[in-house]
Length: 248
Ligand code: ADP
Ligand code: MG
Ligand code: MG
Image 1 (spheres, helix red, strand yellow):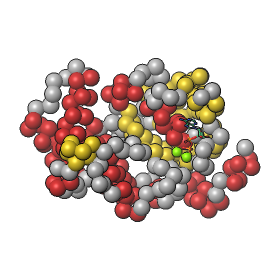
Image 2 (image 1 turned 90 degrees about the horizontal axis):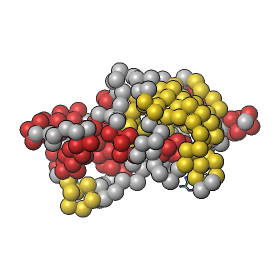
Image 3 (image 1 turned 120 degrees about the vertical axis):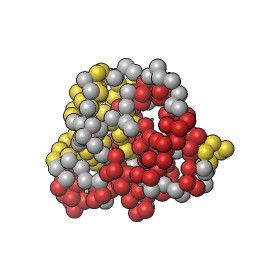
């Protein structure tokens, strides 16, 4: 699904990613952990194609296709989804209308007609039921006055609607409260399938109690310095990151 080879990236001439190699197969969940400032958010931004980062070496493949030169929208249309760390408020645009626009824009980019209204309603109903989202929420104005948990719910709903091949969830270092954590985890677990892959980026182990990863990688100083199974997350929780720092 995702294959990253010797990825180097800089921002303002400062090298942040210093040779990342990562293979994520369909059906897998990978967690990327690491101390603050190690480059986790940079990695997610670079995969999504954000333009403030300059890729200076290496390659990113999605299902065997080199996507390294594509614009963020093109990557999104090919199935890359990056959760928003700072969601925008759009007063006057309901959650439902935002989702309709997102779906139709994605279809347009693929040369498809707009989704017929009845099909759209069916999709919205199906996904909102799956994620236990109530009707009242769907008619609210996007992110306006949303709690942390509601923002996450909306984000996961958007992911469910778009059915990405590769979902990258980058949690802010401030962390999520326990409700938001459960919402994200339940949503991700329901959306997991053999045809998609998830990369969860987190500073803390606790999210991984709910979303159990197949692999855990530690990013430090722009490199993956350790990889293992889910037990690695517990080891990090117990020992902190200092031993990683002293070994590298
Ligand atoms: P993490 O998510 O692991 O905490 P980041 O990827 O956010 O780490 O940051 C890694 C390093 O890159 C930090 O030193 C940070 O200051 C720097 N950095 C990231 N994005 C930018 C940017 N847009 N402009 C300048 N420096 C940046
Ligand atoms: Mg940080
Ligand atoms: Mg970060």
